[in-house]
Image 1 (cartoon, rainbow, N blue to C red):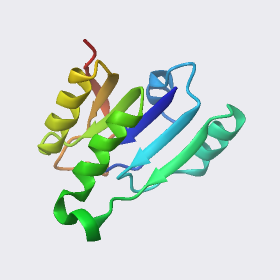
Image 2 (tube, rainbow, N blue to C red):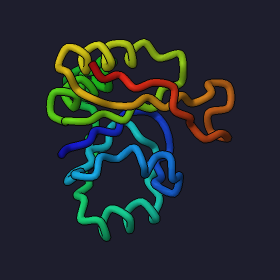
Image 3 (cartoon, rainbow, N blue to C red):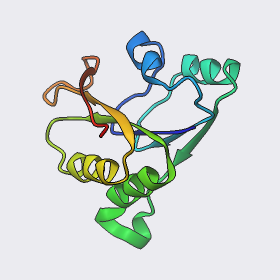
Length: 129
């Protein structure tokens, strides 16, 4: 199973809640828009035989729409979506809508907008049909 992780957050599997959201049959994680990935996460993925791939938006081709275009393409490509949302971004709406249309399963982690760097995300919704 391919899992897309989308959002503007440091990504770490040290948080047990986040590790538990990964489907058991995950074979590949595709990252989009994440700032940093810690060494613990790389070791965890290595020992669990999960491939990791970082995708970068094509700003030259798509300009300001590049991050949203990449995120929507990843929804098409992956089986499960983990979305980090700051509570403000309208792109999350389009991502969730695309997931619902394609019957994709996933989870949203809300990041407090005013101090997103200092707090851990928490689960606010499952968006499966």
